[in-house]
Amino acid sequence: MPATDTRLTVTGAPNSPIARLQKIVAPSPREIQTFIDNAQPALFTQNLENKEGAHKANRLLTTGDLRHAFSNQSVTVSVSKTGAFRYEPQSKTQPGHMPFSAFADYVENANRLSAERLYLSQFPIDAMPEILGHDVATPHMPKDTSPITKNLWFGPAGTISPLHFDRSHNLLHQHCGRKHIVIVDPSHTHLMKAGSKNSVSPHVSSLDLVTSGFNVDLGRLGTPCLEAILEPGDILFLPAFWWHNVISLDVSISVNYWWRPPLRACLWPNFLRMVSSRTMYHDPSVISQWVDIGSHKVDTAFCLFLADEGQSFAAASLAGAIVTAFCGKVLQILAMPESTDPAPEATQDGLPDFVAAATVIAALVSQGLINTSQCGLLLQWLEVATETANAPEPCLYSSERSKTIRDLIVRLNIELGDCLLT
Image (cartoon, rainbow, N blue to C red):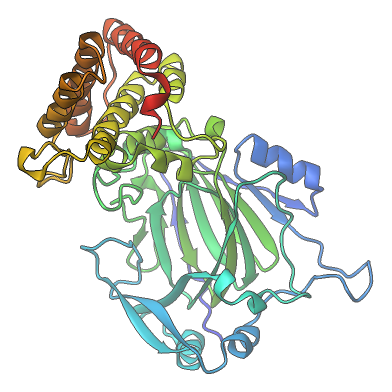
């Protein structure tokens, strides 16, 4: 008999109003698309009554379906000693390997009061497409989306995904059991106590909303929030960068669909923190994996867009990262001897060696590949890159500093142009 717990309690505070996300029954594709285009959370439920004949896909997954699909295969599951899956190296979450049948037995008989939890999380359905058979219900997907990633989530009652955000748009389709969801607008990122911009998990909050006794204390947020209960057949649209906390109230089977959001849906503080993270300084083009910005790679025109949107620090960070990555590529092109040691290799803190990058620029001048004006401009940008990379958090530039950054980006675009494409 699947383990179920209905004793979840939710408490708030006067300064943390809670709004219940209203369920929209059998929405049209146009209605769904409107919420996605506006990047607003929404809760839908499908009409699973078969009105179009027996061929219609209208069935929800069960544990029996998963047992049949996985058969005798083994799976890698996450193991948490606390019931919360933070996905951080320092957390008490470790992977485990076991036969799926044994894992399913555990899920169906797990005691919610036990602290330890096992969870089959983010299992790629493309690795086993038969999970979503021809008769299994799937949500309406938006038009013209970037490649979609489909994942299976299967675990016992009491499983907690602590407060975090994803950098992708997300449709979460609930097949079995219920989930309690708390959603927070990304404009309140400064209150979410996220890991530093250069941490392994900058998308995870250190706030624990679930207290002893299976109580969700929303007063800890210090900000308004949305709340929803997902039931079988429900579909939740979670826009990229919106914070959310998830608790399984029963044995739960979910399938989620992730895809890259358009840039207009990403201009939130947590996205801008990512733009100024050390990941960007090694490969600025990684941003094109996060955001649907077209087939071109990131260039100075995108930096100018950020500057014109008032995001001068992010614009400076990205332009500095482009210049730093450019220096690394020049090293490979020029095949400079190792003895000169000019490569912008990573330092102990994981950031490139900006002093070594400056050596690469000097080599370009000596070989007549750039003029002295271009050399000076690149060196200015390495100074900006050093400043933004070492800043613990994005900061607000003065209007004078913002104008200087924008002018430097314009010069970078005019004087160096396409050669900076990463």
